[in-house]
Length: 88
Image (cartoon, one colour):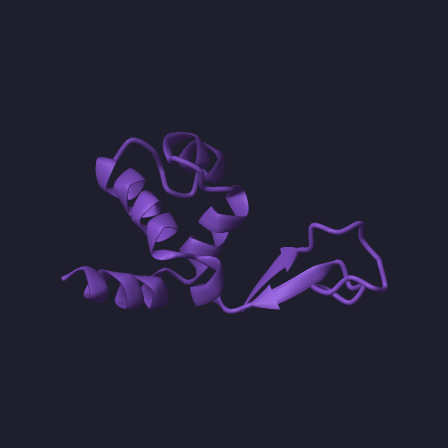
């Protein structure tokens, strides 16, 4: 599971997404799409930066956020198995 901040104003009791908690828990497969994983892999395979430098990974990718990079790094094995086997 990945915890992401809701885009509502934190604490809005009627929010359909977070019910006022300010965050939403989603599965990593829902949060990290194949396209996001592909972008991460392109940066990784380029060797242009240390992959623990999340800010630089974001800058070198098309549109990854720091939350995306952290989620991919945390769940890399699961995502690699999911998306790399689909590509083959």
